[in-house]
Length: 457
Image (cartoon, rainbow, N blue to C red):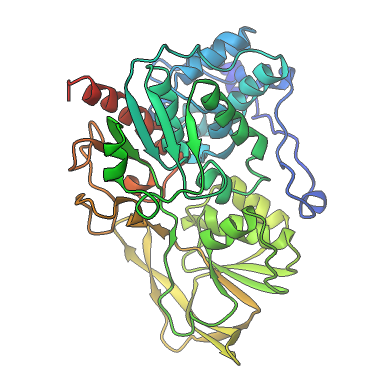
């Protein structure tokens, strides 16, 4: 097919559950492509000589190569092309914000819609599963080296995968009763089915990775104790699970919760009744996930309060679209200033109107309060989803350099901390970021840990 013909083809939309169906359950919303649709979408790729998509992918996947193989019918080869750089394509293809990463750099997107790179990656992985193909490289023979991994999120999972394939005996410690970190307790099942996460850990276990849940490093066992037990190096990938508070009067009233805390409780099976009227504060994917989860658990009147406009929302446009389809309302240019209630429980939220001023350090226009524009919203619950911080419990007793905002300082090339045998990566270094960025750091850290254990670092 000639380039002009490829440019004329419209992006192929996947099938989805209807809003009426999906708000009643946590089933996966978006269906994968069938083989013919995947092939037609792959035909839209221009096979650029300087592929922006690969530059935009945090893992630097060879996107043009795997798309070319897909449209030639070499799906298994396409899968192994992805596997050269990504240890969890089934996860990344579903939850990465492709519009800000690979697809956001697609040349086709300059004059239309970009190639559906995420959907093509998902098709390739799903095809491998459906056809009972091997999904992982053979495990390596043990070298006698040992590494401890604190946290089982995407960074820790990637470290374990890469080290296990270098013959390093890995033990993962996680404070939660479930594995996957934010993948399991921060992302709802309608975006990431739990069998996908389980398959990742089954593969790790098959390579000899030992996993210990319900153990909080820094409380039940220290990093120094891990070292004394014979671990040659430690990776800290604890993420950023500590909710950031609004810092306004009334935040201690009943009915006030925080985004990642709410999602964690729900994903661990808690039965939380937020009442009929729920206000979610924030404009990112966590806020979107909170609102859509509340809707599925019975709240009738759910809306998001965001201090900028829709244009500035950092959440994925696809997630915002689904949110609006499901009936969640969006209130822009407004922010809470106080929470009011009676008998220890909130019943209304005082807000103020905002206007956009000059751009801040993020490049987005800064929201400025409009004096005298206060108004009230009746509510049964409010959930703040305005970012997260790093809980430093894991490094208790260890003097590790940290940035002013609480993340761990590392050598950007090696991800080695100020303590030579400790490495760190993912959200506890980057702040709240994407799965692919955490996985990339996990890959770099694993390579550096091998260098350290073998005396080259």
